[in-house]
Image 1: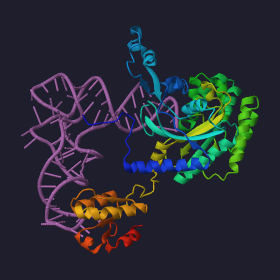
Image 2: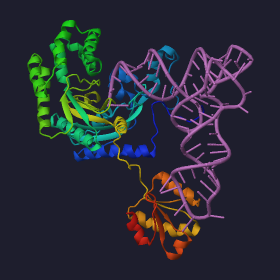
Image 3: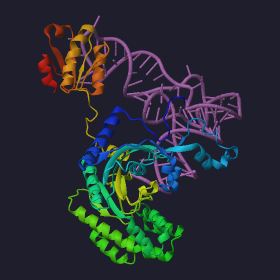
Image 4: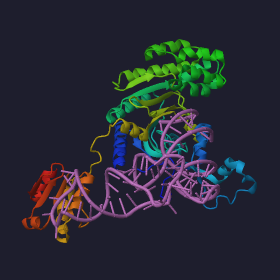
Length: 452
RNA sequence: GUGAUUGUAGCUCAGUUGGUUAGAGCGCUAGAUUGUGGCUCUAGAGGUCGGGGGUUCGAAUCCCCUCUUUCACCCCA
């Protein structure tokens, strides 16, 4: 087929979709603003050296690489150019890549602009990111993230604030969510206590799936990943830990006593949940010890938010990272942040039918076009209405009225105004309400009142 | 990256064991209605059946390759 197309995993957005997407972005942005966060933007492309190694081996594979401009192959020696040598070739001819998330570019930004920034630095950033993943349900190759981060503060008040932001955003969007919280230090502690500290990543990846595949499958996977049977049986009581957050923390406190890191994590969680209890949070918030999250840079609290009334996966996630800027040369800069996945939020709202009905409606009044004289008469009236803040269009062509009415109908424009010979001679406007079909002849002044 | 799956008119889809000119509904255009939409009626336009190659007297239909869609795994928003 020779029809035009767009790359796999990317999408066009129609006006109807954009109005809805903007509704989501505007809601999120306005909440960020009330907490004092300020906007920044970073380029779509980063140097690959800033990106590689930050997201694990899997992440590196998912980076879109940008071919060097000019003569990218000119300086590549012939013996590198073998089919089995693609990684050496790409590193020789690509020095830029598309951003994979907003957190790493933010870390780079903070390091580069440290002298101009006031810490603790609070910023938000709403921009697209790209991942060369195979697209599937709720997964795109180009999608927007809405990030809020504070950097330069270790206070757990920041974590509490993020929970508050999540709560407010989803309350305004009318989505019921479950906010899951865990702590990487607790996970490290668990790995330590069961004697598998070096298997931390394997353990977290496996137990993260417990909701999906069940306890037995997780145990099998742990064994496959080389965790000893005694460690697995030691781990089991933690995986099946039930009760309130306070009860879970109490059990963990004794269980994790041998691990300094683990105890630190428990203490952090206790403080955080203490803050949360004072905040009148409306959404459900729970301590979920199986929550792990793949991104390797998290070191403290981790968050994940799921919509309760549909299965779309995680729609928001984040956590604390103690040393993200370290790789870029700035030590001791702890930060916390979360990222709202606007595209998945859109999908949730679509499946649950949560968008306001007439969000797409914009133009309020259409002036029909009946001819040259009429155009001249209508132009200043339209200008005055626009000055009053009313969205007005003039039909640009002298088409048949039938066609102009059909246009108004399809665009869902509630009023149409007709100025022809009759109206011109009487200095009036014929106004028709497209919903009721009623039609009235009005003066210019009456017109403004009738439609506003 | 692994394993499946989809592709026929603008859209949603029919198309019988390979057999003449590939159909429907909706939408679109024009008219019935030369200053009036939503309803109705009439007429019309629109497809090298995703692309390439092959088998066959003959392919939308069978085979191969490729692209695309959707889904699961991996991973994640």
